[in-house]
Image (cartoon, rainbow, N blue to C red; front, side):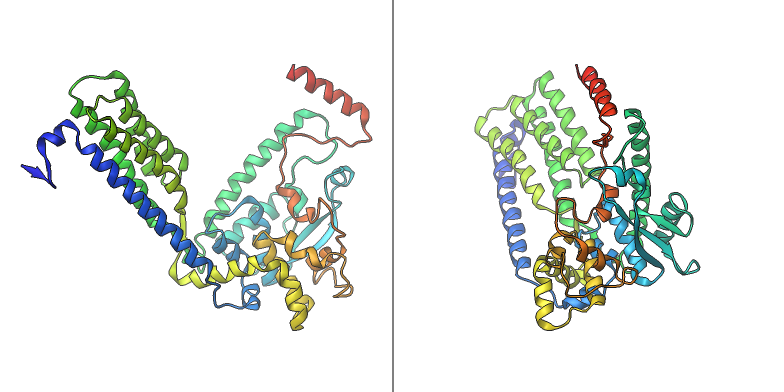
Length: 416
């Protein structure tokens, strides 16, 4: 009796491995070609929304859609800018705390956010942002970005690093809670979903990993302690990869252990064994081609428009100057969009030191005023990025040479 053209004797002896290996290699080739073709087609699409329409949207929505829900800790600033756009918060530059002013690498200014309408309606993520930042690190109605910054100036000693580590862990927990609430907000929740092709790929190959290893061990008809260890590891990591589909490490380990299990199990056809092991290893780079999240069809045009705006952000200033649509209000919105899409440096480069907008009101256009004052340097726009540049080292003011020498000696003794 034959099953799919393969006799039961062949199945029992494990001669199915060459066919399975060849089939998996063909499947991997098809998946890779389709993924690359889909990427090539999407590159040519630009979306139907104009630049002004993109800039008029909520900055947090833009960051969420472009990054496909994978927000970073720095995007808490985008959450604040979203409230500024709505008029709930006001934003202005203020002098940084003295310890940052004295530090060589820290900015001398920071941004302060103030609630203009304490009774405004807030979503759950906005309320959580208010509770964590304004109530815990601010004064209730006011919050400064340098209140959540890491070490940047003279401290009492290296022991204070533990204080900053605890603060960083706490902020990370609060950020995860906030980003989870952002994903539930109406209007944002319907834009991104988990990738179905990735789940099918991981689950299918995890089943192949475990099933092939167990099947070959059973077909061998003899006990092999080395193979048994690899098979157990394969089954454990394949099951873990099915639970945590997004984990590349678990999938790679499952593929590696499955390939090792196939190579040590007694098998009468070395060529078939090699084909199956190679297919398992090739599954790892193909897995990297599949995204963990995908934009829903309803938000596809928005994502394409946002991506086009981001790609052309460096030429935004020249294009708007030619069209005559570069007033201060629009430029302020465009700067908020650039922050949301992580292209502030390139976008603001043509604006640094420019006199195109005269002297904009610092309270009405705080970002524009900051950009016009920047002369260009290695620490540009540190007022916005500094709170999220954490370091385990406490920086010392250059003038404090005695403390610097003492800390160097302690560090040298510790390393020796």
